[in-house]
Length: 297
Image (cartoon, rainbow, N blue to C red; front, side, top):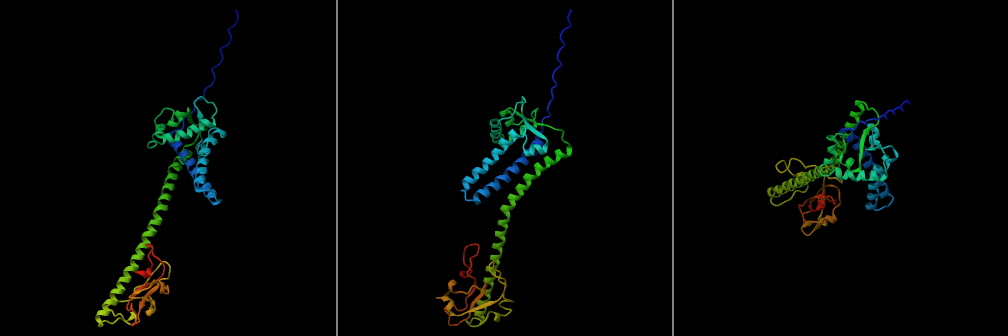
């Protein structure tokens, strides 16, 4: 009696450990940061060499798509972020990834992000930690090597910190110019306030001296004004000097901004024969943040 043929041993099956939601999120954030940085640099370069902004922006977007499509195919399912996390993307049956499948997976990212990123969040609850775009393209993300807790935490924390850095950077880019604008307006308001104070003091002097203006503003007494206020303009050094003008600066009863000297100091028409005798103004031909010439106030 012949011995029966030996039963072949079953093939060893390795059950890949699925990559969890947080480690995947960290890896994806790293990739997104690198892509955004590359897109920004490429867009600046293309714009610098003369390409239209719309075309430069389109090519920069194609760079981002190419990264998520090309790199997993040529690098065994890994992007830079996945390499840092020790994870990789694969087909559920183990067959090789294709460019078309990776393109579909990138398109799946868009669906996973709508609405409110729910398609990404499902990876935290499914048994194989698969997101919506994994189900669409029949893929999964697994650990390809043992990753220590320290490395996992580093990737996860980096994934949390990078968006915060980007958010703070964007917030600063918006807020800092606004604060600077508000600060500038505050300074300009102080200048106009000092101009009003100086004019009021001259008017009080005029009333106290029987319709006569001071020959020089330093003649204003403690009753009218303790001291000449400092004038601080963006385009001139600060100072409290007063520049005297004669009738040549007048246009009928007003100061003509085209005839001033642009000293950045207080201007005062001290000529009794001038049509605008007694006028106090800002001797500056530059415009403020409102676009109005200082001398026209």
